[in-house]
Structure formats: structure tokens, C-alpha cells
Image: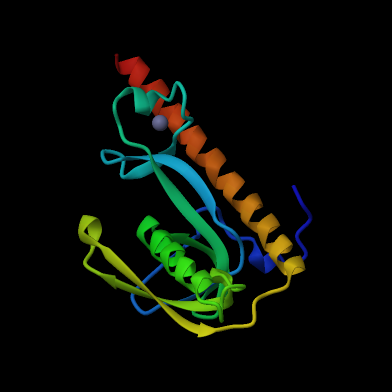
Length: 174
Ligand SMILES: [Zn+2]
């Protein structure tokens, strides 16, 4: 467990910012991905351990949840990034790198504006590249990485515990 100087950065593991329509985001870390299964009956996610996973064994599809450290409307924290947003930013980053004028830049050198329509399963996201910004230092990137890993490791452990609880309950019923 690293020593964290700025305690205001430590949030409860489930306090991740959800992206809403019109949000302006700045990514200040690399992505952290967690494989999960969404259990509709429990309305919650559990961890997917991959080989030998109980839920995979029941033919349930696993999905990855993505997280970044960064700014959402100027506020620091960990944001949960929908897969479609991640792919859209990656696609636009490819174009940034193709352009000779911006080939040395990446997704962390720009602000991104989130568009969101619909709700529930019909939610759709769009992402628009906005202003070029001054990116954070490599040193700050390392600090953010530490915060991201610390908090998401706790979240992962919670998802693993929940998975084990549900497996134990199911086995009792069987
Ligand atoms: Zn699984």
C-alpha cells in the first residue's frame, strides 16, 4: 500500500465518476481494465477470473470495465469509461498520429467532450476531440498510476469477494 500524500484523492472504491452528456474530460493516466460479468438478477458486476471461471462456465459473457485517472469538468478523480468511448478516442488518436503536425501527440494532449443519448441498454456515447492542452508531467503520470492501481485493486478485490459469495450461494442451492 503506497503512502498517498494527497488524501483527498482517495475515494471509496465504488466512487467512480460516470460520464454524462456534455462532460469535458482530460485523461491523466493509462487505462486500467477489469474483466467482469454483469449479473442481471443481482444488478451488479462480479470479477471474471478467466480460466475456470464459474460464470464463464455458465455461458455468461465477460466484458471489460475501463477506468482512467483524470479530470471530469475540471475535477480530479477516477472515471469509468464506457468501451465505446475508449474505442472512439483510440480511433481519433490514430488520426492524430497520422497527421504530420500532430504525430507526436496522443489522447492525453487533448480535451475530449462526451455526448450521451438514451439510457439503460440504449445508451449511446459520442466523443469529440476538443482543445489541445498542456499535458501533465511524467512524474505526475506515475503518481496518478499509483492512485489508480491502489483504488482499483481494492475494487477488484471487492468484485472477487462478491463472485465467491455468489458461487458459494449457488452451490448451496444446487
Ligand atoms: Zn468469467
